[in-house]
Length: 377
Image (cartoon, rainbow, N blue to C red; front, side, top):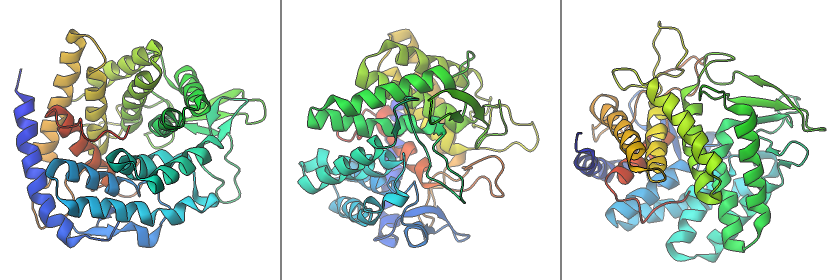
């Protein structure tokens, strides 16, 4: 088997070399994607409440732990402070509190036990807990939009926000947060995972009775399809819920989804937007690849040696394909991972998205065994 650890170490060196130039051009911003000149666009100016606004802070913490350079720590703290406006806006808080404050405030608190960071993370956790539907045992995903009440919707992505609640239970010695996260994971397991290991993106419930009604297609090709980023959230999210609860059914579910994902990886090791999309046009989502690789590596640490080899090897193949053909190593360009797609039916495809860079670096750190100093999940 190829020595993926050596590959990861070499690739991380390329990451830190490029980031030394990128950070000098991009102090004080929060990016989402890039413009036509391959430069980051400051999404914070356009939408200070956007769900991805924690990932740049997360990348800064990754680079700080990789290099020890305090410029990255300073930028991570700046992102955390910028998010205070979001934290004080109930209208714009949603289930993605985990993505925003795990990668910023929780990471900061892990670094130096800062009390203000602890307070921010706990406020975010309490707000998320307030979204729990007691009848249906699920977290409401989204706020109302264009007059549409969306109290009925839960999504597969939310599994990745549950560690904010597990963290709150641990740090506060209060089981309520963990109980809600555990209940949501069980609901997701029951209603959003198909027997073949593929996942649904959106589940619809009766918010008054809690009854499951049906699923919706969401960001994949269509209803009944297999949106790959949702598959990746499922692998990673159930592995994390197993780590935090020790419920072995979550480990089994993570493996079920992982085995389906691995069985559908194309020969190129590039990941499509949807495993059930049409053959033409073939559309890639490298963010799903990066997330799945990181999730597979977390899962690998929880299973026996035979399965561990399978998951680590699959993650290594995916990451090598990203590094060799899906990454931009030009130091005058800001992003790393360039062929991402937010959803199948949008107008734009195969462009940089910030969370792909975050999970790409995170997965490389795991593969190189350098992740022990930074684990906000």
